[in-house]
Amino acid sequence: MKTIYTLALMALLAFPLSACNTIEGLGEDTQAAGQGLENAAEDTKGY
Image 1 (cartoon, rainbow, N blue to C red):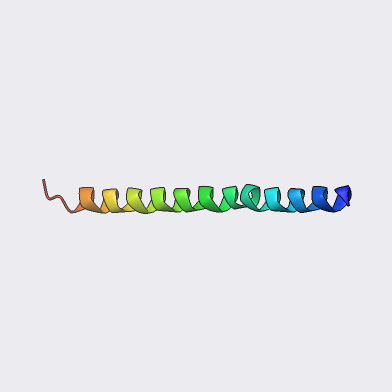
Image 2 (spheres, rainbow, N blue to C red):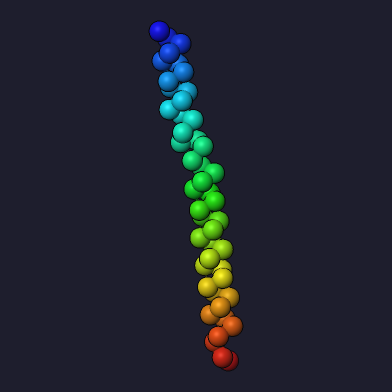
């Protein structure tokens, strides 16, 4: 029975840890989009 609880706990902890890469990737994509917007604004400033 203790083994089942241990495996369940490991499975529950694995999900948040695997999501870190997804959140990190989202942050990088958001940063790249902001940089692109900033570059477009600089290009169209006109002075």
